[in-house]
Length: 321
Image (cartoon, rainbow, N blue to C red; front, side, top):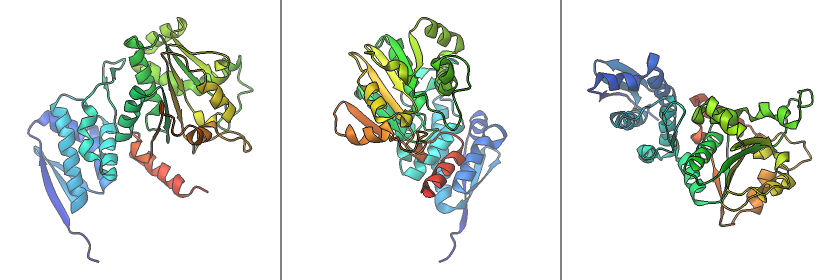
């Protein structure tokens, strides 16, 4: 079979500032496209010349057109936008790319607009709006925790809920909690770091601490949920793959009136003892078909970290077992 002929196509950007934005600092953004599509992109005057096999070159041009459209609307772009466009192109959903930017979920602590970055994230946000309980299941880097916190803060700001409750099971990922000082909450706090990071990014460190001090935001290990009824609250359970079946049932039955629950986890990263079954895995089977509950599945195409992360996820999945 004959090799595909190398072609070169030109993408013209009339505004020099827009051209600089598309290229990125030290060619960061075009490097993402070059690596992801196996093409070569070079700047000549006010244009980008894209070389490679015809189909990847065409895909690169369409991605550049979409990104330029965002920039012309005044939307700031970064590396995650290029990664998202690449993933959507590979997934056959690139035509929906600019639709993701139609709605701002919230402004973060730096007054930057927070939007969904992938088709999977869009489904996740829509599910949270429509349902009382939503499960987000998929690998790290897909934005499950961050978007759940974004939706929680947005609901709090709109007065839809009175408080936010964030929790996770106190299960070690190969380390031991025993040597850490303090009570159970003190011991598990380091494991709640992704939740703190998300809050700090969205609200700022000082505002987060004020809300924590006032009890409007509560961050606690899962064991602290037992015996409670959570009314008018936005409740997020992170790392849910490390719950047992009884813990998952206990948590879900805390749901009170006027509340929403988000349950996030990655079933490929279960740290429970071997004889213990994951409550997240069981919930997917037991709760399927209940109208008020929706399961949203993420995969490597929804990863918005460095492009190599999705390749790592795929490589491990291919070698599983």
